[in-house]
Image 1: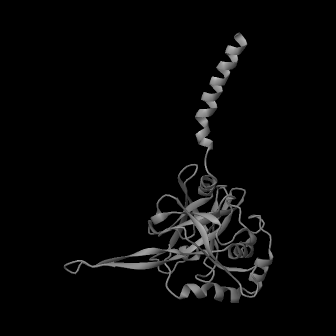
Image 2: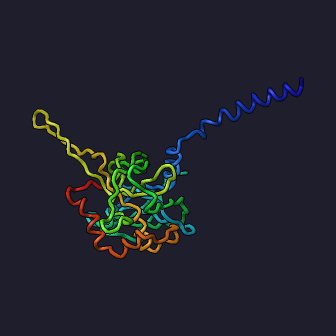
Image 3: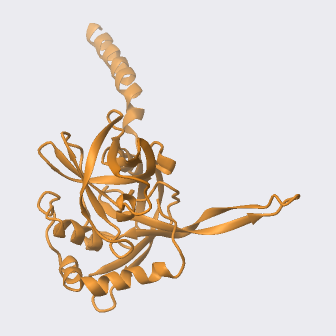
Length: 286
């Protein structure tokens, strides 16, 4: 009888102990990808005269010792239009909230190659795994991490809605879109595939539609609304090629693929093809 009582008590203990903690482990694949992506993402701030002039997003792509490298957009760090010397900082939110000074170490030229790299010294952050070209396709589930209006990182979800391939060689990706909703501040935000969590794209900009409202006493007003499926991304080919040319391929665990080799050998034609669709109508950035 004592043995049966002990077994019964043990079963009750197990059901209470393990049963109470099980909801914490019952997260979906998408939730797990989001939690990991949030640790690999940062906010980017451009400060002029002690005030934040621009706010955007970024992704940690490589770490060497206590030095981390963040990928964001070139239009985020460009100095044109700023009223004075600029300083750069990244805001880390997880596991705690703090800021670190950053400096621009490599940048492309928007809109053809709207990518830039920031270097952060003194902190080894969590870095992403960057997908290869053959690991993304139209219809894939993705989550997007961005910092709307410079506030806390947030997540949205959708699918890869378009993948523009080179007409001469389909291994080279020219452009990419998602239908995941984003807004101001998402530029430079990472796009992560589900369920693996690899980085498959970086937000470059989004197209908007102007909505007008008419009122009385000449108080008409309008605002821009992001168009579904019109969020433009840098695809894996462009991201990988940019990082390799910046000399960080080994740190980011990248190797040259057929797509990146072809893209690098025809950089001029690639830039023209990639930018052509975006010149049809102005894009909203940041």
